[in-house]
Image (tube, rainbow, N blue to C red; front, side, top):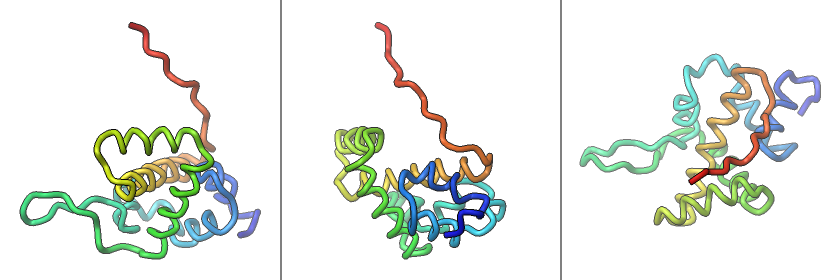
Length: 134
């Protein structure tokens, strides 16, 4: 990936990793303005839930399989290296989601973050943890 690409450092800040994952993402997205929302971007990558005819929600079978795999692998790595990702995954597991479902939910969340980063052209801003007062 070229360091001169305008989204190179922005994408890396939201991905949490550098190198091929960010490069594949930027190459597949192209111009972020062609997607109207993070939902449209997730649908293009096969990470958006689909309403089945019976009214039940199932995972998407369409979309860019290679990029879906990139997000899935990125989520696996994030759980090992990022405490925020681990907390999110643990919360999904506590909601009775299976490991695979928790990883897909984390990948979907990464799509939302990356879409916002590329749309606004601002890197990730770390927020202090919330402390609830009783």
